[in-house]
Image (cartoon, rainbow, N blue to C red; front, side):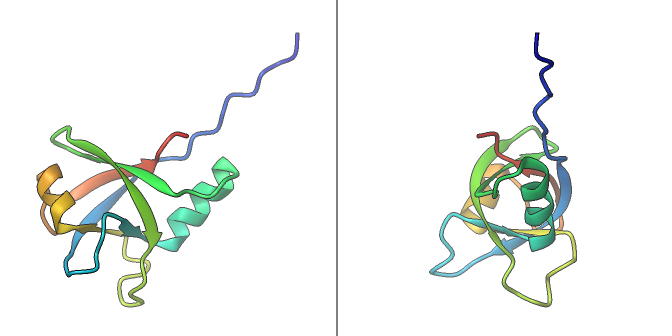
Length: 103
């Protein structure tokens, strides 16, 4: 029999919530490029969706983009649209667990 290698799963990250507001926000969250690159290396594929879980047990899947604000890069933050923050019952400054969505 051929030995099977366990599928690699990327580690989840605890990130601080920052809210995204505005007319053109959409439904995508933003996180640091370094996390996306690390997950892509581990999974050997690019990450287009993440699962966000709160410590209250709420969870949702969201499309993900790189943070485009240079002042926020490298700070361990996730920028979440206000509409999704309300759904997850989180506020700016809360911690959430984020991991790539399983494909």
